[in-house]
Image (cartoon, rainbow, N blue to C red; front, side):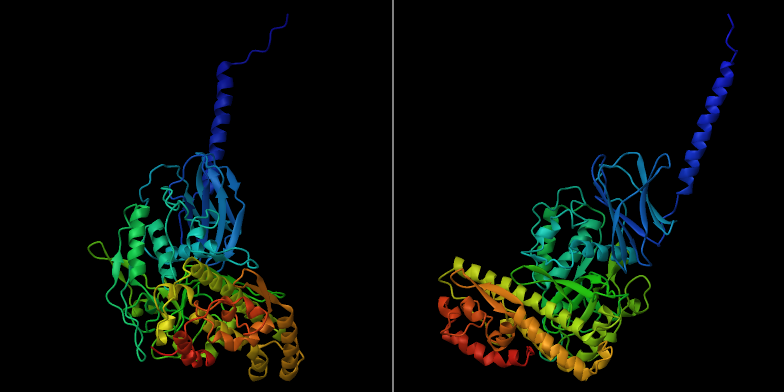
Length: 597
C-alpha cells in the first residue's frame, strides 16, 4: 500500500497565514483608498441625528459648488455599496438617499463627484440622544436649511400643494428630512399653524431647534405712511445649541416668536441693520430656497424651488405662503404674486435671515451690513433691488426664471397658469369663510375701517380676502396687458420672424380661446357647484373690488349678477354700513394699489 505524500503541518499553517495576511492587506488597502477628511466640497447630513441598528436612515449630501454624482457606504472591510439617490436644486445641489435598515458593518458615507471622493462622514450606530457637536450658522448650515426647504415642499411641479396648515407636511417623513430627527417622536403632535408673516420665522425656528442652532427675532412696529417699520434689539434664543429641547419647550418658544413677529418684521428698510432680514443681490446664485420675499404691503413668501428652463419647457420659480386661516399653498413666482413698488413706508424685495455668529462669553451676535457685503461665508448684503423700478424688477426676475427668453405664446401660458392657480386658491379661501359662517350662523363678523381691512385680527383677518383679491386683480391686469407689453417691450420676447404687432394679434386670439375654454367651479350657498370660465372671471374684475367680505354670500363674492339663476341661492348679505365702507374703499382695488397706513 502506497503511503500518501508527506505534508508538513507547519507548511500548511504558513500558507493559511499568508492567505489571511494577503486578504487583510487587500481589505486595508481598500479601506485606505476611501479614507477621507471632510472638506468644504460637500456636506453630509444624516437623519435621525443618532442612527439606530436595523432602522432606516436618510442621507442628504449638499454642495454649493456643483452637483455630486454618487453616494455610497463603505463597511468595515472596505466594501463599497452605491446608494440609489434623488437629485435636487442647484445651487445648492442636493443628493438624497435612504438606507432601509442600518447595519453595524456600515461605517462611512462617501460622496463622489465624477469618480473622485470629495467628502465623507462616519456612520455611527448609537442610542445617545445628546447633541453630537457644537454647530453654528455658516455656509454649510445655510445650504442645509435651503436643501431642507426644497425637499419639504418638493412635490411634482404639475401637482398642487394646498395644506390646511404647516403641520401635515412637517409630520410627513417622506417630505420632512428632519422628521423625528431628535429621536423623541417629537413631530407627532407638534402644533404649528403659522399665518403669513409667521411662516418664514416658524420654518427657521423649527430647523434651528432640530439641528441645534441659535435664532434671533425682534419686536418691530408697523411703520407709518412715510416711514418703514423699525425694530428693537434682537431677542436671541440659544438654548437649542447645546441642549436637546423637548417638543413642549419648542412649542413655548414658537408661541413667543409668533406673538412677536408680524407683517412689519419683513418690511423694514433695506439699509436698516436693526432688522431680522437683509436684502440680497437679484441673481440666481444668491436666491436659494428659503429666501424670503417681502412685498411692500405686508405679504410674505418663501422660495422653495427653481425649475430650470429647457428647450421645450419654460422655467418656474416656486414659493409657499401662508394665509390668516393658517393654510399653506405653493404657487408660482411671477408679476401677479410678487408685488414690488418704490414706496417710502417699506423695504420690499428678496431677503435672507441675518446670520448669528459666536461672540465672547458664550454669547451670539447678529452680523452687520458691512460684514455681510463682501461675505464669502454667507449670502452678501446688496442694495441692488432698491435701484430698480417695478417694471425693471419684474423684467430682471423674468430673465432669471427664463434666461433663454420666452416665445409670446409661452409667456402667455405661464401667466395664464399662474392666474388659474390664484383663482383656485381663492376658491379654498372663500370656502373656509363659508365653513366658519355655517358654524356661527348668528354672528356678523366685524369689519374694521380704513387700511385696517388688510391687517385686522380675529375672524375678519382669517376669512376676509382683501389682500388676496388685490393680488388677484393685479394678476388679471398682468394677463390682460400682456399683448400690449409685447409691442412695448419686444426685447423681452423671442419673436422669431414675427413683428411685435403680429405677435400681439396672435396672443389676443390665443387669449380669447384659452379664457373661453378653461373652467373653474365654486360651491354656491346651497352646496351646488357653479362653473365659471376664466373669461367670466376676468369679466367680473369689478366685482372683486368689493367681493372680500365673508358676511356676503358666496355668490356675491364670486360676482353673480342679482336676479340671475346663479344668484338665486344667495341667502346672506353684509350689513349696509359695511357695504358703504367697501364702496368707499373701491378705488384702492380699482387702481390695484394698497393705500399707505
